[in-house]
Length: 370
Image 1 (cartoon, rainbow, N blue to C red):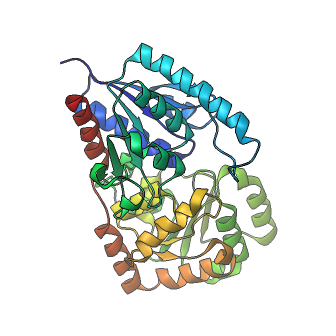
Image 2: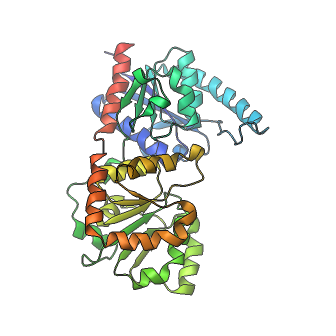
């Protein structure tokens, strides 16, 4: 049997890159001889993150559409898309893939369109509960569509949908990790509850402002906070805390390197509602307050959050109300053991395990069936 050759495409954000790398790792576990090539967008974070994970990547000059879609700027973006599609066709002729996998993001649109035109079977993975424009467009060309939520028939052909869940960073699933060790990482004590606040790898202005507006409440609360500000906001927040005085119960960092320890230490998590974040919260059974970002296409983070809220697996605070309501609600919730228990149990009940392996098996099945 020849070595499987697989193209994986997508990126733009960590929410697309983490699942893509997880799928690649699972493929390598199942078929160590598999040859995997990533295709991404030039100047996006996948061009650094994918090689760090040990995989080769080729960058395309593709860019995302500008809204409104009738903007004249989209003419140049369409030209870049057509250039990218031509480049992918050259890549396919040289690499000769058996299957192409798209995880969303504009690079996957060019890649899977070209792959389909050249007779390469395609699989797409949709992380969100509200399908993105790229994957909705690609659905007719995909042999299989792996999803993380029920009810995706409203976007995709029902006979091609597989409920697999979203792959997460495997480093977070560390059964050996002790809570005492996790707390020690951040200089915290086991005698007080802990709230973890994360706005994504780049941080989130609204979440940061919510903390700054509530410094006195934080100071007077019997609660410990781990706050990831994001590197973009690091300097301005340091200046603000110097002016106002940093509460002793507030651990501040621009980037958390040991996310497994941060999650383990936390009794409650405040987060944006990206698909990867939600999958992590469910698999770890973490109670959470979600603040959907309003700055994403088709408001998909609100749809993601509502999938949990409807099952009483998370609380939701609107972005526009966060500065006033977020920290007071968090302090109240983290001190309510019954609420924490029910939120965590309901989140865990929504978790889909081994998503990376399930998707990898479907990819390999496509090769066998072709």
